[in-house]
Length: 119
Image 1 (cartoon, rainbow, N blue to C red):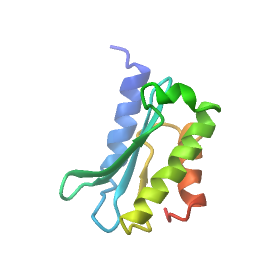
Image 2 (cartoon, one colour):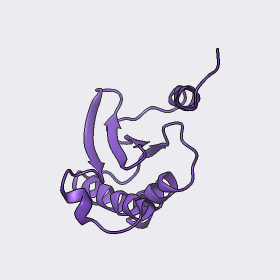
Image 3 (cartoon, rainbow, N blue to C red):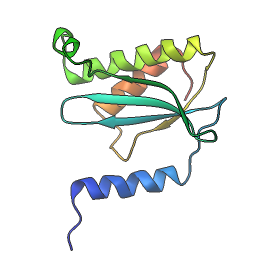
C-alpha cells in the first residue's frame, strides 16, 4: 500500500510530537496549513487546553485582507505574539505540524520572533 502525502506528513508530525510537550509556562504553538489558509494554536498539553487560536480564515473578512498567503502568515504570527504577551507568555515551543520549515510555516515563526517571542 502506498502512503499518501498527507499520511507522510502525519507520520512526521507524530515523530515530532513524541519529543515536544507544551506546558502552562512554555506552551506549544501548533501550526496547520490548508491550501488557502494558515492556522495556529497555542496549547498547554499538560491540561489539554488550547489557550489561543488564530488563523487568516475569518469568513467574509478573509477576502478583505490583502497580500499573499506568506504575508498573511507573517501577520498571523505577529497577532499571535501580541495575544501571547497579553497572557504573559514570553517563550513557546514551535510545532511545525510535520510541514517543511519554509514558506508560510517559516513566515509565521518569523512573525512570532519579530514581535519578541522566544522559540
